[in-house]
Length: 104
Image (cartoon, rainbow, N blue to C red):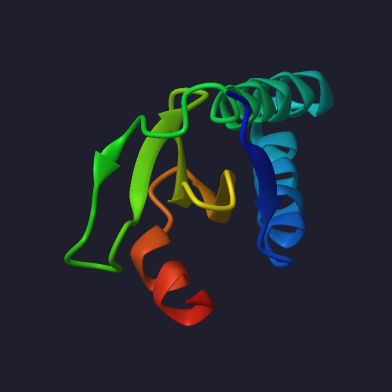
């Protein structure tokens, strides 16, 4: 069974911020590679949506998984609709919990 992947509208901003941050200290090629690694982890949730650590104390059904060594993908799973909803993607210790709170 393959789930549909949906992104919160602000995830595009998250990825732009990550790209700019990495590009500033490591260059464009490294930034592209990291974004590709993050995208691969996110896409893998379509086949294995119940991965990650449950974070029900933050938001019921919330899960978080690492990606690209320093990124965190926070998401929920709707089994009825067969959807994974990516709420935020952060990098380098950014406060993903606060972002989830603002986006829920």
